[in-house]
Length: 56
Image (spheres, rainbow, N blue to C red):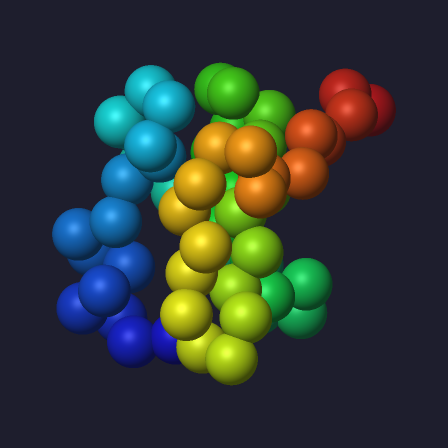
């Protein structure tokens, strides 16, 4: 994942910052508890494609 791309991407729901999980190949939004998949190096930033993150 290109670091420059990470600097400009935001959560499509709340417009907040995203965290990159290299192992899971996801971009996560902590406030919304959503994980957006990265497929073939391309982040899929649709809310309906996001996985809900359960609180721990």
